Length: 155
Image (tube, rainbow, N blue to C red; front, side):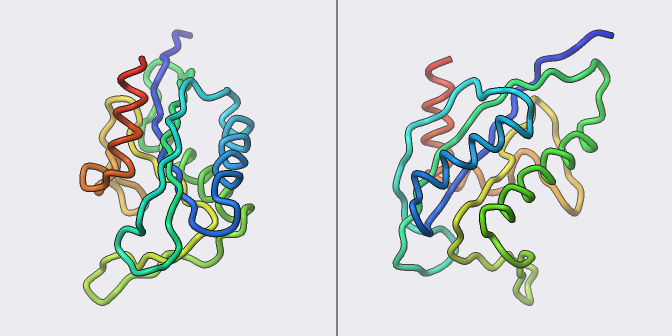
């Protein structure tokens, strides 16, 4: 069976506890769960919270994985499996509760030990209730675009 190398870009952020260690721990867990070491990781950058008020700054990074997937894989099914891996790691690292939304349907953001977002998954476009790829807010967020561009400039 023919295989494809598919690039998966994940955004990581932490603003509780040892932020640097949280990101390092999440990446180590991703390496195990995705069954491959990361291909590239950006520098860590410190940023203000996005979308909510907090006196705790975030540490952010972007990590690139190259997944070996079968020819003709189902992008939505694979994306949802990756999303579950990310959410499971977040829970294991102490993130609690389901996402909350305001009356307008906008996400309510809070402090968190780790946040893992799927930014890009190959050239795939996924738009289902649980997952949107490319990430719908990534182009608005310097804490995503700066480290994403850093990785791509190195490749």
